[in-house]
Length: 303
Figure (tube, rainbow, N blue to C red):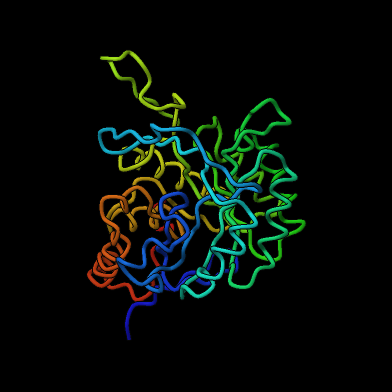
């Protein structure tokens, strides 16, 4: 018998703990020329908004030492086209499908959740609360426990499938936000989203990104992500999905030892589209070397 890799995230069974990270993998179609998606534990789509979005103008991405800063601006096809053009492919991709949603009002999130959660083939929703709340002067929903809880309650009220809240690291107390969404009914949390960063061209004396600021990701944020995953996992009872700078099987193991039940890999796939499969193999080698026959045995071992 081989090693049992199946994990359960808020009622969603994943064949293994390796997921794609939202925003780095499109809608999954682009990856099929590199590998079969059924090798993954699941696919997390890029953020879907009620209406199509073109996002920010170029330049949208800047490379940094050990990472990158992106200011894409949630470019996506919008709810209607996602349902008609993208879900049919995802429905037959052979693995769990988690749809990431984003909005500017609580009602946006509720509308998206209600429509998408009834679509066959969608297993869970991931809620991107790192978005400006237009009713609160642009303050991000995830910037406060109260804002995060309101979105969670609204989505849970209408969703037919499990709900995962994606937490922002750009807060003073991420554990407080995690507890708030757990109390509001979240089935799981994922963390961390990107850190706020920028880059300046010293020759032109201008910001390199058209939006001035963007989201910092990649190996540079891994120590921050790992610390936050550990703190959150040890203070809530619902499952935690860890992400932030993962690019090897050893990274996956670290996050799981810290308390994550699954992980998402994002930035690393731009340089290595098949990184997910390598991480899966390296993870299995570690488990064999240490005599584990079930991936769940290592979750939260570090205290």
